[in-house]
Length: 217
Image 1: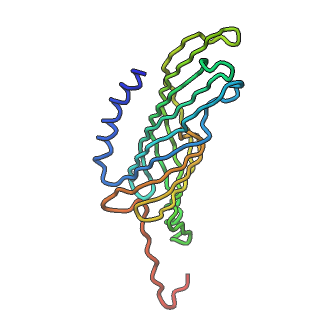
Image 2 (image 1 turned 180 degrees about the vertical axis):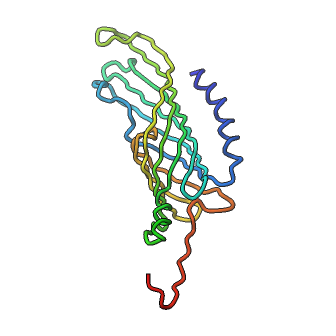
Image 3 (image 1 turned 90 degrees about the vertical axis):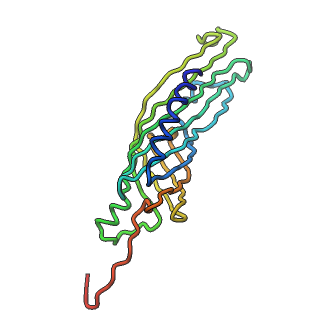
C-alpha cells in the first residue's frame, strides 16, 4: 500500500501540471463495467466489487486527433461463504495514455458534408494502461488451497487495446459518451465529457453551403 501512495503523490502533480497548461481539452469522468477479473476460480466465495472509476483528460491536436491521460481505480473482494475471515482482496490503480482518431469529422470532410453526424462524435482509440495492484489474502486453513495464511503483494501490469466510442453533445460544452473495447479498465465504459476550451469547440462547426441558382451537383 505504501508503494501505491508514493506513486500517487508523484503522479498527480505531474498530471495536473501537464494538463492545466493546455488551452483546448476535454475532461471526462467515467465508469466501466464487465471488468477483466477472473470470476470462475472463486466458487464458494461472495464477491464485493467497486467497478472501475476513472477520470480522463484529452487534448485536441486538430479536428481529427486527440491524445490524453487517464487515472482510475477499482477493487475486488472475495469472501469465503463458509469462513468469513478468509478473503482475497485486490485494490487496483490504473494509469493510462491514449490516442484517438475522430473519424466522424473526417467522413464529413471527405464527403463534402453529404454524410452528417450533427451532434455525434465518432472515434476510435488506442489505450495503454499500467495497473498497480495491491493484493491482500487471509486464509486460516490450508487443506482447501495452497494459499498462505497471510499474503500481501504489489504488482504492476501493462496492457493495451482498441476502443470504439461515440460522444453525443447535448450542448456545445457538455456531452455523454459510450465506449467499448479492451483499452479501458473495463470492457464497457460510460461517462460524460465537458469541453473546457476557451477558443474553439472540439468538433468543427460546419455551415451549410450556399446554393447558386442553376448549379447542379
